[in-house]
Image 1 (cartoon, rainbow, N blue to C red):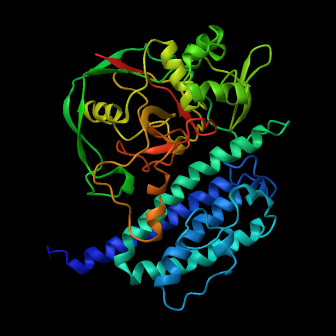
Image 2 (image 1 turned 180 degrees about the vertical axis):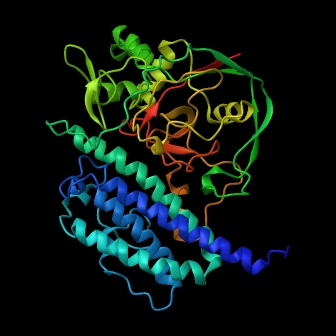
Length: 421
């Protein structure tokens, strides 16, 4: 048997990257397929982006950071798109205001499809010619996977405001399984390590790997369910300021919160999902709560939220597999967890932690404009862990640090409790 040459390995790597590029880009189009042009143009609030903007912005990333500077002879599809579809990269130049993305009736959905095809036709040549750009291409693919989740988060909010309460698409029904009894899993304290080891892809905010000191703690075996959250509501949870952080209580008063986002009491509780509005399933995990609501529920329970280091260490010690109720299952909603051990750590809902989103010791952002990807947001946000039912498979890791403002509710945020040992 002849040994495999370095050139053969490089060629196989390029083929695999080209295949992955095609698969990721195709998934975005499949997610947009059930939506009309009108659906894809609406922006229901400043935090939501239209579907067609997500499709264009992810394309803009490959064009702006890869094709324009690195592929000889490449011509931008439309120079105006550099302004229209820049999200927040100051180093690239000015951009269309985020709250006004829904005012862009043009370019239309068909034109965005042509833009995506234009870039997709050019990328294979770049992948073949510039193996040194593989890491940046991989970053672009993970960036697009983030936007695939955002497409579903955002269109859910858009459709929820329509009186017709239309579904994005039908989904597999809930499992009908009763949730596992709540148990508490002990994790020892001491000097531990967290963060990514940089041997495979990770976002820059997941490292560097570093030591942390943990006191012994216990982590709940599963996510908080709707029936448990209903007890919090029935006990006046949204009317008791002593349960809330000051900013959270101010948000409750300002927004008039009385239940999680998408819940409605119609003679019985209902919930809006990507498959339309339906009766609330008491056994499924509560989702679409803010950090403030998660923290208030934990206080009401006599518990607390886990710190992100605790969450990660527990996942490693309990050998949590990187599989669960993710996008590929096409449930699009959290489902009851069953079995033994540490359940639902991957998928179902992103889990709010008690940790602010700040840099790890020794953190350095990437050089150039892509360095704005994560580091510039390390202020005023809270960390979530674990992925959700709309997270693409293969996109999440035990070290993955998602982050949102503490009042955010349209994200698929849920609750896992912790306590001191």
